[in-house]
Length: 126
Length: 146
Image (cartoon, rainbow over all chains, first blue to last red):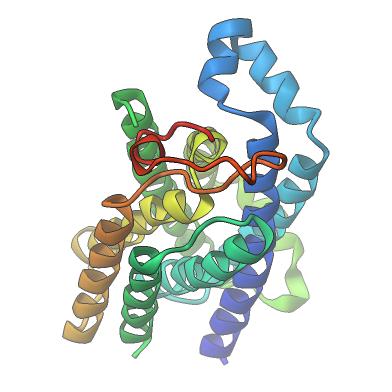
């Protein structure tokens, strides 16, 4: 039963954080290089620019759901299973989502990386 | 990619790892939270370990957002997965969690995957309206926006 709770939490983390990551990446690309904005307008300009980007708030809400699911999972499972399983599987779903929604060029090197991480995650769950 | 950007990526790995580890320490102290007592999740924030973990994860979040503003999501994420390798090592050496040989192999594969991504360009997406303009490979590897 404890294991079931841990894997249910892992599943929730994957769905919520993939949604959150894509929304946040989209928002930050619209904001632009924060290092450059900082140099031109200071820290307040960065904060203002980020907070007024609508998709940022949606991304934070999704990440909040992922965060509480992770807390829930950590109270039931081992640190060295829950964190790698949830977050590295998210890495795979994110690569697919980034290609579809963010139009990133996921080339051969990055797909190999995705497969290596996916295989690594399966081994860690055995 | 300049040194400031590599510092931000290192911040992602270190803050994320330390934050997760402190959270785990705090949650273990509190014990299992059941579905019937979800209020326990809200009260968990009052635990000092959980609180410190959340503060470090805020530092992680700032570095993560900064990196996403100048690099691909598929480039930044492996930097976070290096943290999972670190988390497993901390779980093993500090919390004495048992790590089997297959799990060690998994850790190795994840680390290799990170190496593959780090060897490539940091930014590949093209902005709307610039779709016809070609980007030279050197410009991509420098992280120059098209």
